[in-house]
Amino acid sequence: MTSISKCPKCGFDLTGPASVCPMCGSRIVSPPGAKIWILMLVQIVASTAFMVAFRFPKIMIVIFVGMILLGTAASAWAKTRPVPIPVPPKPLSRPILFRIASIGVAICALAIVCFLLFGSVMFLNEWTRWHQYEGQPYHRSEFQVAEVHYQKGLKGSVDLSASGTVDGNRERMNLRPYIQARVRNEDELSLLVPPGTIIPVYFFPNLKGRARVQLYTVVPTAEESHREALSTVQYALLGLAVSAGILFLLVRVRRSCFVES
View 1 (cartoon, rainbow, N blue to C red):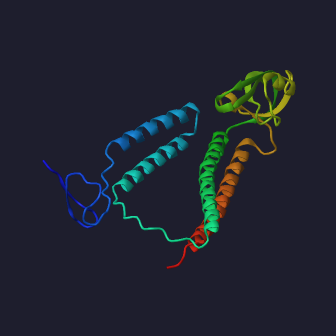
View 2: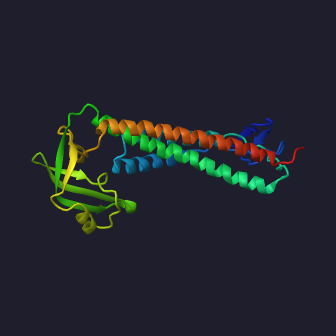
């Protein structure tokens, strides 16, 4: 049986599948079908597995899944809208300035994405760390190094840690905040932090793993993470505001490069 549909722009009856309306010339867009939703599920499963494997905060996993859902819904909606007839571009009066402004627009757009992405990750990490240590009992102590550990991870990441004792308890400590120099192997790490080294720390007896031992700083661990989270928000918002302002100006400059009709 032949299917009959209407052109969404002029209402002309279309018999059978058609890509262009014979009456007004508009492109006919068909619904996206089930493939786009299957692809969405694959993306959600893959990204969730990756983030769980690398111990991302739960709130970040929820945000990324929400972004995938919104992106898929927006893509499906866009594919059902009729494609307008392309209009010939206006001639340029200042082509060099137009190219420079276009490059600037691309850079500003990339900067906005980076501020949103990396700012969100840094903020959520510090926010999670703040709530992890907020209200937890702790006291100043000393970590005596017994053995250091140098472990390479994925994509060139390196994990620096040490085993030792705190208040007579066998503990393990993350050395990354303690070591400022670049370390290329375990021998260099052993020279920087030899066995017997005493490191001032905060000890959190109610926590587990490396979270129990944190490098001593003038500002307590929870307050430090709180300050870092607020500072990240301030700098990210400032970067977004500056990038958005420059982007707005560059868009105006691009529009001025066309010949007025």
